[in-house]
Image 1 (cartoon, rainbow, N blue to C red):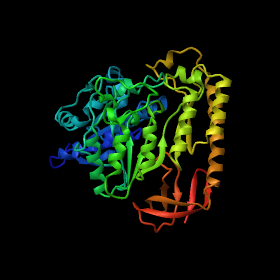
Image 2: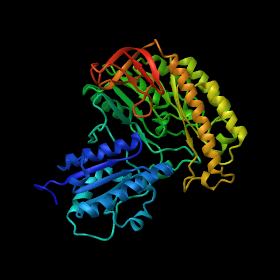
Image 3: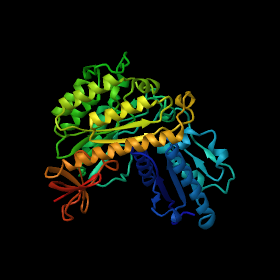
Image 4: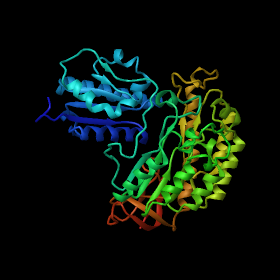
Length: 456
């Protein structure tokens, strides 16, 4: 199979940015091992499918990608090996080998740095009707600043995973069971990685983890932080101290904060963002609901009054802040009154960026066992109504942007993003095609189209 002694590997990466970093780490280790990457699955001796399993839709996308790879192999590449990696493998490690015997190997989240020896073992074997299962329970791995990694993002934008796992008890979420308990990198490790990225020309650093606000707090000696308590970084490393250290790096770049949890925001963190000019005036903070009944059933460790007060304090403390959030509709037990309260909150809070998810009943979660499961047609109706409300708010907001001057980062010829737009999930600012890609530019908004702006 291998040509000139070198194994050719293809990789399909599904899911979120956290999964993308896992794919980048696998590619880095494969290249270090002398293997050759190919974007063409039909040319690969080994095809890796890095899967997502957060909600049913992502799970089905992963399963379909695996079946498609198996079917294509039968038609055109019978000797190709197929490896399934990522959250699907980790979540269903006991079931998948018997359900998908056509897959040659399953690896979990702790095996992403061991993918090269797994491939060597597979390529050296004859045909085997049984799947190899390398998945181990309770992942422990976190990357470091010197972890081999080949970035798949544009040269000017990068993600840094500052922690792995999650300690929150959200009743709808399977992530803690898949990715394990929260484990932070050290502040020094993250800063060293950021320094190298900025030196290489990166203009945007996107900080990610399951909960970026919990950074460092898992290592506070002798104390476990309480939800909704003030965070004092004098007790140890925290997101606030990390942001200040990153802000001190020389260069012209954005630091973007994604995946924060409302329970661990503090006045110190708000003050830090306000005082650090390189930290984008943009915060991603999924709230999930505003009704006390729903927040309690979701085990969100917050209530409606706390959320309203936090949003107020953030807006007052960080001038020009753009808030991105997400909500869930149709959660078990959600009444018309709960949903009406959510719609009213959307109108009053007027988030700059927001989206709504239709509740997904996930096997293995507490919420899956709750009584009062909402009928799928009711869930769909509420989702449609909430999305219409968000679309109206987005139109009003974009209409108000006309005439404003924005600083944008050019992603591709004619396409850019403003400070209020994160990669992949937010809008585009269309700009003149001759603006240099990968650089900042000042533009004036002339019109808007749906969620996007047009500027020159």
